Each structure stands twice: as C-alpha cells, then as structure tokens.
Length: 565
Image (cartoon, rainbow, N blue to C red):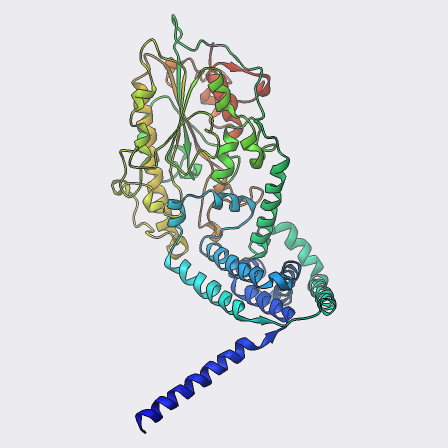
C-alpha cells in the first residue's frame, strides 16, 4: 500500500468514526426519556449508603419484595422530582446540577456517613478553605469525575427533541400520573412495613441522594428569602441588666477573670476524667479544684449551630440559628456592663457571636507563634498578660478561646507529633478506609492535646489568683461519631443523632479563693453538680452570674455554679 493510499484509508476511518459519533449526538431524545434515564442512573450510583442502611434493617433473603418496592419508590420519587424541576428550557442545567450534587454528596455519605440536611448544608457553607482541603482526597476527585463530570458531559451533548407546548403539556401530565402510580404501587402492598420504616427508621430516609440535599437546598433557600422580612436592626436582650459587682477591685473585692474555652468536636466518653478506659487527661487529673461534669448535652451537632446557641438567650428548644445574627447574645450584655470581653479564635470563626466584641484570629502564623502543620490552640495563650492587668487598671475580664480541638476527619493533624500516644493512627481523611481502632487512636491523641492545652490555661490563670477571682470553664460545641453503626463525624439531625454527637465534656477549674460556691455540703455546689444533667443552656446564666449581672431574662435559670456575694 502506498503512502497516499494509507493516508486516504486513515482519513476514511476517521470520517466513519466521526460520523458515528455525530450520529449519536445528532439523535434527538425525548425529554421524558432523558428524565427517566437520569433518575435510574442516580438511583443506581448515588445511593449505595441508602441501600446499605435498608439492607442492614431488612435482609434481602427475607424481604426481597420490600427491597424491590423501596427501590421503585426511590426511583419514582426521583423521577417525580425531576419532572417538577426540569422543564425543556432549563432541563440540561438542572440535570447536570443533579448529577454533580449526587456525585459529591454520595462520596461523603459513603465515606463518612454524612447526611446532607439543612444544618449540614449550613455547616458546609461556613467551612473555611483549610477545613475543606482536609476533606479532598483522590477517591473524591475520581468519583466526581467518573460519576459527575462524565455523565454531565454526555447530558450536555444530547439533543432534546423539540415539541409543541400542547404535546409537551400532555406528555408531562401523563408522566406525572405514571410516577404517582409507580409510587402508589410500591407503597400500597407493603403499607405495614412502610409505616414501621418511616416511623422507626427516619435516619435511613435522610440517606436518599440527591433528594435529601435538594430538599435541604430548597429549605435553606426559602429561609434566605425569609431574611428579607427580618428586622434590619439588632434585637436587644437583657435591657434591664444591672451590675451587682464593681468594675474595678476596691477594698477586699477583687475583679473577676474567666477563661471560657469553646471546645471542638470533643465527646464526653473519651475523657479519662469521665471514666474512659484510656487516660486521655493525665494532666487535668492532677489538678486540684477541678470538676468534670458527666452528663452534659449540646445544643446542636455542628459548630455553625451550637456556637451561636451556646451564648444565646434562647434555650435549645427555642433557638433558631437563622435568627441568631439579629439578636444580642450574652457577650454583648457583658460588654455593655463594662466587662472586658475578648474572643480568640483558632477555629473557622465565632459564627457571629463575637461580631461586637474584641475578636482576634489565631489561625495564621502572623499572630499565632505555635504553628507547624497547622496553628495550634496553645498559641492562643500568647500575650495573655497584655489582656489581663495586674494593677489599678484591673477590671472584670472574660477571655473566650475557640479551639481547633478534635475537628475531623483529619484527627492526625490536630496535635503535634509528640502527642501521638496511641498508635497506629489513621493517617488519611478517608476514615472508612481505616480500621476503627486507628481512627479512635488519632481522635484520642487529639483529646490528649486538649488535656495539655486546658492544663496550660489553668497554670496561666494561677498567676493571677492574688489579683483576680479566677475560673476556667471548658465545654465542647458538639461530639463526634467514630464509626459506630458506620457513622462518622457529626452534623446529623439532632432528633436522630447518636449520643456520641450530643454528649459533650464540661470542665470547671475553680480555686477556693474565687468566691464560687464549691462547698460539697451545699446542694448548689460544684461538687454536687457534676453528676446532674447540664447543657449549653447553662452557659449564659452562668456567665452573667459570675460577673454579677442580673436580668429578668435569665431569672431562675440553672447555672454550673453560684458566685457567693
């Protein structure tokens, strides 16, 4: 064969191949067929965790009919959702968005057991770049490309068959009826099982993807629309607040100094002080006048929800995270009453709590002198003397330290290498790839670093006992799941979240010289409180009580301790 013949043959093959591809892309597809195809595709590829949860409750060997039914129900609901959202002018963008959402959410649900409800969506939007990078892994990129980018590209190239508005209307009406009929056909024969499923296994429904994330987006979107009707000015609280103690020390009265540590992702049952089998808190165990509360619950299961709730005037039952930015909190009241309030942050932010008081960001080496792989919590104690005056200028002071703490999934990054007491450690952010013990080892090492940090806070405060009534209060924002029932991290809906995400440590260091009631004989003492149920609701009245501020807004509210006057 001559060179010219070879070139001609190659060109002919290329034309044939190009022609075949062109024919595929030039074919017009009915929109309803496309909706059915994408719904089937996502049912099969984006719901691995959903079906795992279902099969763990209903073994296929004895529930094959119900499993087929619930598969049809999931497809029917997805098909119905697409029909309601994907009309011809916007069908491709909608379906592409659905495919991407399903790919991203499916990865995190399968890898970490994450449920993308409204609270998790808020938490995700407020996650900073460093935290987000902790979650990026090769498997994540691979899955998004394979299950998101590739099908999205195919959808973008498909030509949707044109239709008259009358024909399109009749077709859409017919397919809506068919989808409702499919849903009914799946539900009715197994009504008794579905009644039990929906009542007793609410969490499983939340794994449906992308139905749950889309519902969360719609809910959050309507909430943002509601913001237009919310007040433009700050809603004031404790307007009748009064100080019972002087701002500066005179005579025998000393000014007050509290360090309030906002913990991150710490669960109570992993603290040695609370009876954990491992000694994760050896330094704190040696401190005198230390009180560890054994039965404390959080307001929420995510930082974005819990931190504003911790310092709110609303209790957990009444708190609305969307309204928090429009309400004064206890820090605002203390600041107005002359207390020097400083918030030092080594986390993502104060979530709006410290917007009107002194805020210092310690997540950068420019400010935090203790940074290696990341900036360490201990750096927040740098320059402490500059915040606390030991002379005639001394005044009541509240210093809030917001930890990076045990923020997951990269627990191995949360402590310096010298604190790796428990080994081996899961050295990836893909926790499901590690055995449970190595995940727990990394988490417990981070608790050990918190032990070191809190011990350092206490030793720092001891230097000021002569000039101040000093106290340290530590309470975590929420807990963490470490693989129990194949659930990792946090952020699950509070009503169905496991106790591991809601039961948090509370530690109070209170020396006998600070006029706090610690007499074990007294029923209101610290010693008798450590086994009582407490919660984030106790924080606001405790802060006001310690600094001698009274207001009818918290009159009679329970506190961690009482200040003797």
